[in-house]
Amino acid sequence: MLYGFSLGYRRQIEELEETQLREGGVPGRMTRLRLALRAALDPLRRCPCAPPNVPEYPFHERTILVTRCGQLCIGRRKISLSTVFAGQHVGIREVADRIWLVSFMQYDLGFFDEDADRVEPAENPFGPKVLPMCSV
Image (cartoon, rainbow, N blue to C red; front, side, top):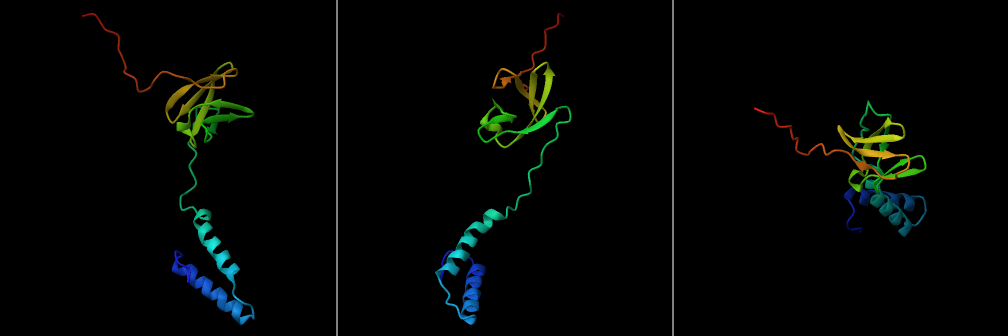
């Protein structure tokens, strides 16, 4: 008896062993091993989640996926952003000659140019908004 496997896989093992006995074969450990491997790998094959939606950046030229190590890969160049954005899509847009803006959702994260391999931060969108004082 195999412990730790669902009842469905136990039934499959029993059915395969019965089939092998009817055909003149001897049920062996390979049948159990093959089904055990299939049972272990089955959840990895079928992911119940839907494929990720790629956000649209209509005012940007490209949408790029940030790597697990937090970099933007553009051709052979690797521009460091942050591991916080790993697996997320960001938009890039050329704002001046050879200067690019990186945006996530509706927030502008920063800029990079052709020479630097890292994103320099833009103004903090969550920072306090100080209005000029007016004279009374």
